[in-house]
Length: 351
Ligand code: NAP
Image 1 (cartoon, helix red, strand yellow):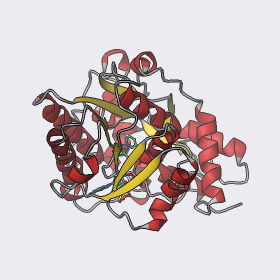
Image 2: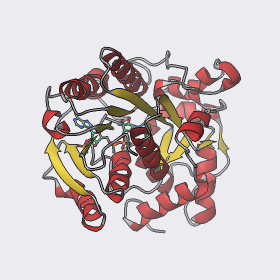
Image 3: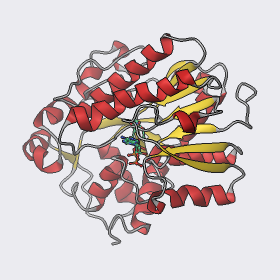
């Protein structure tokens, strides 16, 4: 870890988020001083989980008030840092205006954070949390890929403001990051491209979309069956390890697909039903036409259903295993521990 001075602070943007929580835990475990850049540093409901970790782990945490849309807002938090983790970006499905609610904070926010890196002489490496969504837009796209699998060489070309706007926001934000990086030569950029993140976070009441599917399953939305919606999954704790390795290994380079399992909603529902048999969870395949009909009532568009249900999903994670020494945990424990955590916390009704 000589590449990064462990006595220097490390910045984490969006530190109160789901993904960031486990990363901050890892950094505190390793003894780092974490500069936590958040929108609402006085919101104890959010910061209490980070504070509890800082109280028992060797590292320290300091909060900074920052917003992606305010230029220069990360300057203060970045002071003295050699390593920056940029995780903040909206991950929401319910939006009014895709440009304002998703693309602006993602793209302008990235430009803003990296603009601060350009001004901060101490910065050596920036790790940006991108997504597999910057590699593919819809399940149907995977059929066109070489070997029908996602690799770090590919980019999402099918998403737009009107269709899969979240995926579009992640694509334009990552492209922005590479552009800003290429225009200078002091700090290097590594991107982490996770698939769908699951597993117990530090805050069981967080609002990331990752929690929605567990809650939907918990309240019986899948009682008639689960859609054949295939996706990749990554445990939030493995993802924290990936960020840490990407930040501290001198040789880490470029993009990294971080995905533990090629899976899907059917398998996830099956794991939960096995462990929590009292819940009304159908484990049979919900016919595509039925989901297509009910799409708007479950927060999907019919185009999303057409282009995403019934397609195989595969990502190549070999670069992460080779360079970052990733060891991925099995999905079953990730899913059942996550569901159990949300039941315990009252986020899913106890049955
Ligand atoms: P999350 O819990 O909602 O975290 C998003 C973070 O972004 C929050 O800390 C939020 O701050 C911050 N943020 C949003 N808008 C902001 C703004 N205008 N100014 C400052 N901060 C802002 O979601 P997450 O799942 O942890 O996502 C974290 C990152 O992982 C994102 O970049 C997301 O795209 C990426 N990712 C997630 C998944 C997944 O399945 N969860 C998969 C691939 C990639 P507040 O705490 O103030 O709301």
